[in-house]
Length: 168
Image 1 (spheres, rainbow, N blue to C red):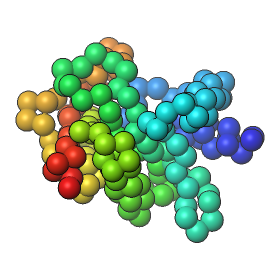
Image 2: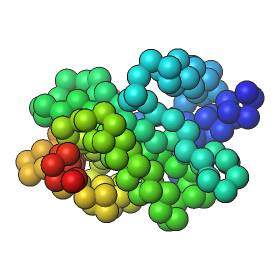
Image 3: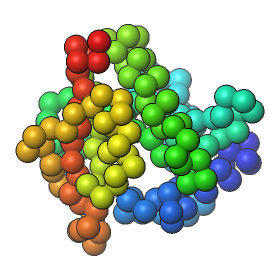
């Protein structure tokens, strides 16, 4: 659907929404990322999906659970995440979606633990992590291996976690 591709490109290229990301994607790269998301949807319970407003189905962002695909110094391999259109920030959508994702991860998938991470300056995302009951891992900060050295200000990430037991 052309409108899906347009929305995805907006999300992947928006300089405000991608402020804490090292890249902004051109249309071709964004289309490829969308095709990857669609292909994964039928193969796993751990996916990123489009977040929509309940009242009208309008796309407002991405959210999901996914397997971490990089070398890391922590054992858990499932992360929770979100990225919303900046015009929809501040309405509690990320928190609402994250609560639903935790419920899915712990109740449906029986995951033992879920993590999230962000650059320390991304206070909005860190606030969502705290609102959904996640705790910062002491001495858990790490340099994200997928962030290029050209973006050293985005390399350091703080790590938050929640176990199924703590969630319950």
